Image (cartoon, rainbow, N blue to C red; front, side):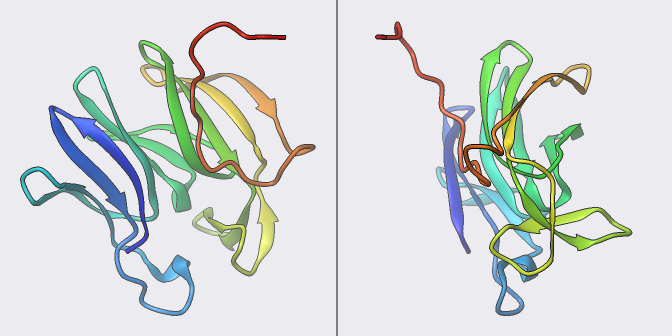
Length: 162
């Protein structure tokens, strides 16, 4: 099932997972979900590679990595150039989204697979600052010179010691 995030949502513990693979590669796992562990029920299903389920101001958000987007309960809020799978809230409505290079799976549908799978490289490794209320990218930091994948985005609190 590839469980890949834990979060609190409305006082409950939730988890995101890919669901079962239909073939040898993870790209065949097309029935991902977000599950409420506290009450034992699926909150959202049929997500193509969910990552980083998170709550913000009473709404549930997650990365739908294979479609290259960030999604809220009522639909997509932002698209990404690559395979998004990490995000953190910087301020109310402002999200930092980490993207990895991916593999182009479908030219017509724009589906992006994990970098470990076969196919042509697509997208970039970097961090996007997104206004989720406007669906607008406010800035981008290219990290391709450092790495090809971002697994998560974590904010560090406190002062920098340099």
